[in-house]
Length: 175
Image (tube, rainbow, N blue to C red):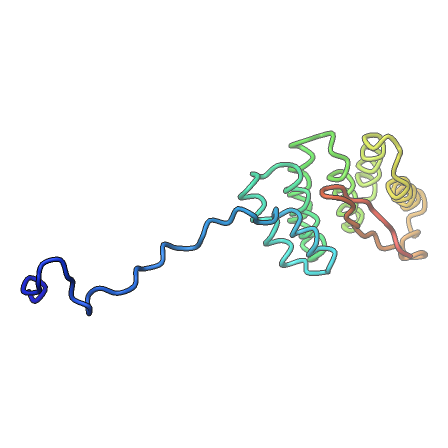
């Protein structure tokens, strides 16, 4: 009611104040969630990498790169069931994507499914045209585990993922 009594063209200074912010500014220079996730994986921050990969899924959709990355992060977090599910979805989405086959092979080796792991590594090796020394080595180790059942106990090999480039993963085994 008092505003009606004020002179024409002026507003009550109590009611007039700074404008409310319009929200967060549009971010146009954001770094791709996959790149952030890869950097966090390299730094050993697997939970944060998983969050970044989920953000990338929102940006790109659940394509083979995102599914493979999510599977790799879950593998590093010890969530082998989730990793296997995501990596199977990745190879189903793109049957020619060798990194997803590699990562699936690692999960299968970790869960003791050596026979299927060797088949998966053979697929990765064929898709990679035999260019990756690491894939070849992992295939050799998987085949040795099948031929010599107590091989894993004797040599205690641990399979690990190593990211190379924006979406390529290479496998290394460490004795």
